[in-house]
Image 1: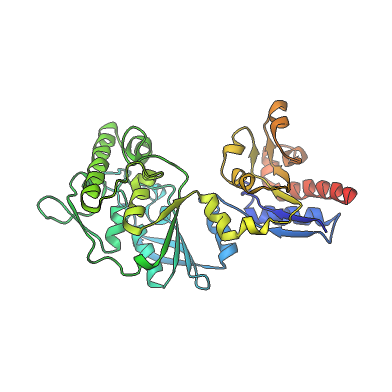
Image 2: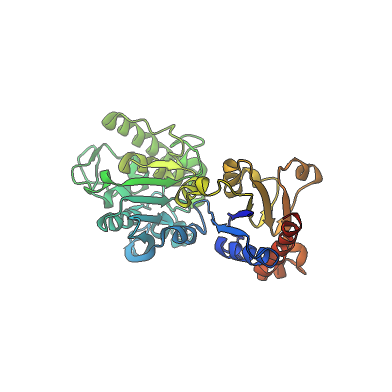
Length: 376
């Protein structure tokens, strides 16, 4: 019997990955009702990741009041699976740029303390595995705020305690780890990180990302000097050079902070999700893998989810279902794809395509199912 794996990204703004799976299955089964289908929705660590992990972890959302990037109380949530003893925490929930107005955004003054509070809550619940999504940050504190919420203490040259905000990077002289949360050593921390920026310098956290977080050119230089100082201090005290570890500069240096303070591994978001799904194992023996995203263009195959599917492909046939296909004939010919479906061809216009994405996806899948029936 033909076996099909449905493993899509979301259709941004119209369908979740699971809704995509359901529409495809419904369409195919109209012609081949007994076909074997397994749904493995994917995500890249950004938008839509919580829903996908909830599907695999069978978890619940935990909400609590934590500190926002400026130290004000805000309600934030994370995904917790008691059965799998796993939590998925998005730092943007507590430390995200979306929590600040344009006037408030200033990475000299912001902190990841609230993210640390979410981690502490998960540790107190006895989790053994924490996945951290670090996109959308308002911060450039190298994770000092997060670490302070977990018991680390930071001091300047006069042995005065520091808050762990961005401007403290230039002042830091020593780190005291004596009061750190005892569970940190026992937990497997994984960080979904899809950038490879170094910690400081022209391609580092401050120069590349802090202007989007409200930093002027003067502040950018100040933060970059601070990150340089932070790394020199870490080299001196911990004999660890964070500068060129891939992803150290992610989320205002939180990538580096997760390595130093949590002993975390940084991995691409799609690889982390594939691991949770048991993807590589489950696709063995499949005849077809169906994947897709909103738009198929020249960037798709260097993108995250579809690239992740391609990396796992062995001898399975590949079908792509997308709302819009924007490829030249030459680009189409280069693709090693066995079936491409463009759902917008069924729609009157873009608005119709977005509003009725599920219906048109089902229609495209029905057409695909008909070809399977003929071949089968």
